[in-house]
Image 1 (tube, rainbow, N blue to C red):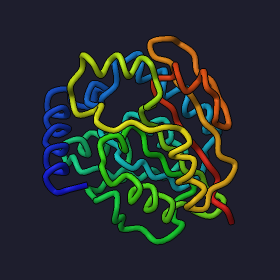
Image 2 (cartoon, rainbow, N blue to C red):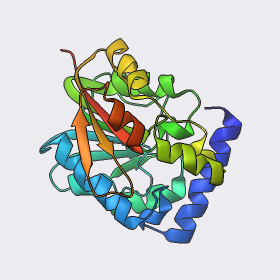
Image 3 (cartoon, one colour):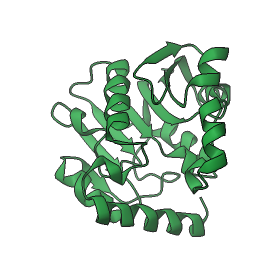
Image 4 (cartoon, rainbow, N blue to C red):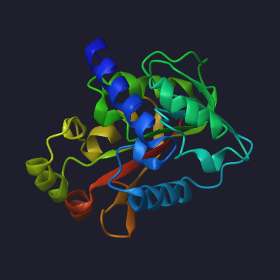
Amino acid sequence: MSNTNNTNWKQYFDDKANTHGAAVQSSDYFNEESFFMQRNNTLQWLGEVKGKEVLDAGCGVGAFSEPLVQHNTVYGVDFSVKSLEFAAARGLKTMSEDLTALPFENGKFDVVLCIGVIQLIEQYENVVKELARVTKPGGTLLIQTLNRSSIQRKLLKLFEKTKKFDRMYATNELKQLYVKYGFEQIEFLHVYHPFKFVSTSNGDGLLSDMFSTSFAIKGRKKS
């Protein structure tokens, strides 16, 4: 991410945290209901996580990974220092760092989450590469982002001119990166806002690609 973009987004999320505090409105979800629907479904899909080292990369105010704090050590990294104040209050071990140059050793984390972040970043492959580096062999990397193929997104883009629609991704685009950086058992979770259901796949599903507004991808790092 360029320094200019980094500064712009830092200011954007600092301002949101100042306005909304610890509330989920500090993140760019449609609304609170959408946030909790996505969080609950995504964490259920991730599976039980206990006694693990977890990284929430781009954690914001820490609302997404908060349910994992009770039984795990959860690190939260973000460039919005104001947001990190609220994440720390939720029990995350917080630090302001660049997601392309994390201060952790190779293979530190059992689980790495990156939720709603890479659509904000031009150099997204560098972020994926770095997240893969800090994922433990046998560990899980889960990224959630916007679906480029979504009909709803294409319609929204006609009316919503904010930066959050600058980058969207195809499922196969991220699947190729996962393979490139050593992941297997790659799966997808498709979210269909404003509908209250999700679906899972191994990729290449035409209908899920056309109608899901966002998706999560997870994979297991090869040992």
